[in-house]
Length: 69
Image (cartoon, rainbow, N blue to C red; front, side):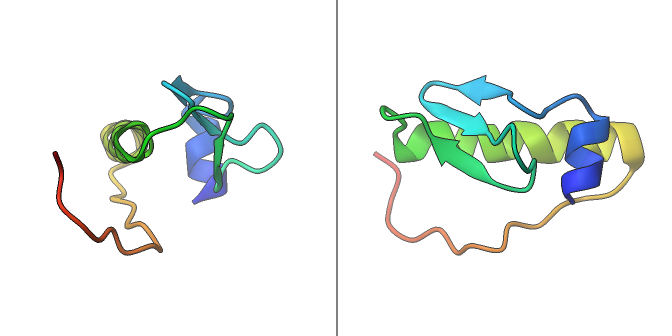
């Protein structure tokens, strides 16, 4: 997944306080102000771009719990 994300130019991409790690593109880091919504939005953007450019749909390894506000 990291290779696909990097090939799509998403290493370092940000949404609010969430960022695709510049060290390893398979990780999302909180730069200090990320909300859960920032992280979920960034994941969605990554999935969309990777699928659009490679035809591969990425599935998160985490399970999101709770309700959106």
